[in-house]
Image (cartoon, rainbow, N blue to C red; front, top):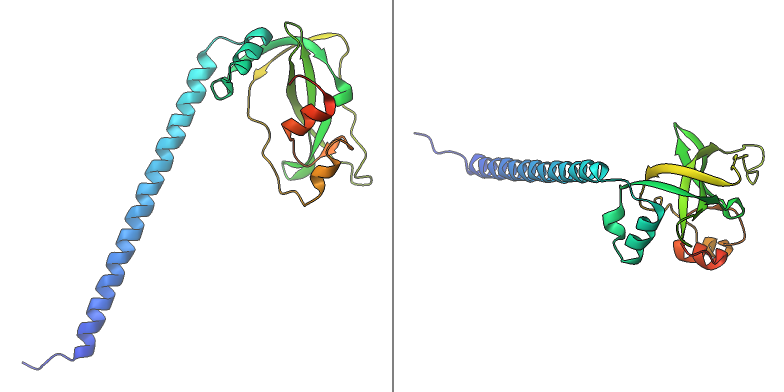
Length: 190
């Protein structure tokens, strides 16, 4: 028998260790993916169970929110009656829809059953490319309206440059919706 060169033994150990590390990393990534799948299934179950609950009216919504049950209200069906407050409509900038830039339109609704006001995301409108400050027309009916929808968390926050919050009440176009600042600027009981 000829003696094995020492270099091949070291190489074998290095390759074996690298393979074991690769297997361990792959297994941990697989376990992470299974955890994410379980989270998504639980979230879907929450959506389904809350959608099956009876719809909340304005008084029930205001009462539950006052009790601090905001997380329990998320994704619940609501049927509201009230008056639009179009003078407080804001446009959240830089919101994409099918690759086109535009705005989310948010208008407060004064509830009929209470003094509370609910912010309603009314949809998306495209931006005017010639005049960035031009707001697209959004038809807002006068008088009492009935709405049916679903409660949701406030829109996601986007990157905002320093100083953007100073002009929070000065424009109807906003980068983000800061509920406390909006409440303060409008004096509405959100």
